[in-house]
Image (cartoon, rainbow, N blue to C red; front, side):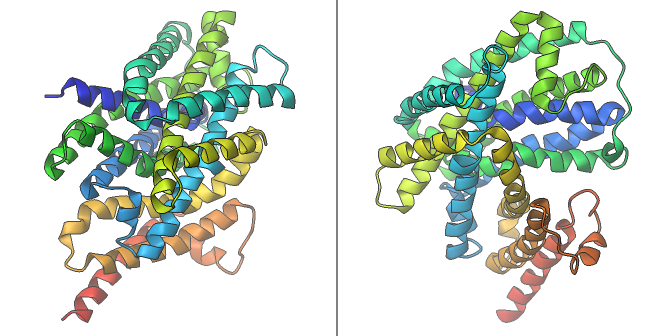
Length: 428
């Protein structure tokens, strides 16, 4: 049975995960996948829901944070990788992206966009984010009990309206979804940032349960999984529904991104009032995620430095404010290559956390799997940045699942197995 605290923490985790990317990418997937939608959204849910919940459970396994998990490779790797994760999902990309999307979709329909308006909006946005973030002990009650229900109500209103209004048949999928739509959806789920964000949010969940007297490892894991199920059910339902909106509206006009798809749907369903509903959804989703990311980032960086939590929270918020004013397109352009590099490494570390007890010398397995994965994901990140490496291209393209964006998978398994064998041989 789940108690009130588990539901509240589950709702909080839902709100923390459900941010800018979660709104933008499922409708785009639905529009592009068309008749292959169900396969594509299944892949998206694996990386957009399954992996984040596993990541939070993995943090509960170590009863600490992502650094302790990453330290199983090497302490220096743990420091560098975890810092990159927090910087990526926090100050450099995640928080500024959330603020920029909130601005474009909540203010865009009502005012003429320019630098001064963006500056004013982000100033107010980040001031409120900082106020909510300065007392992390109250984040569960503030978000889990108050903001999440409002967010869910606004989303449900849009979804119910879509079910009665959008009746067009599904279109044919675009070329990249005609073959292996499950794997295409899987890779698309990277863009939510949620699997690596979960490495940061995990400590918020663990801290929330510890504050309620749950400190024993088995009990902590059990309650974390329960809260994760609450979060997972909510995220899956929302992803499937707003993805379906994209699939049903695919032929109704020209749309360049998921935000435009949802804007068109809101207008078709509710007319001018739809922009208000959508603006509320976006503003709340991006706000709650930003608060969670500031809290997680400040807790981590204050822990590895001599600065206070309050000082770090102010620094994170201020630099996020500066980067948000560079514009959404700039943020997305720079963030995609970094995510392509970090995501496979994060996936390997998360999965190995659950396989950890099976190995007699687990550090050798972690090192073998992570080092090999890092080499191949670095190639993917470099090419995603627009830099070509013709000497390596034939080798990479010959690997299984290359066309699905998972060329790193088989090498990661081989690296882990090799590490296991070498570790056993060294200690015989």
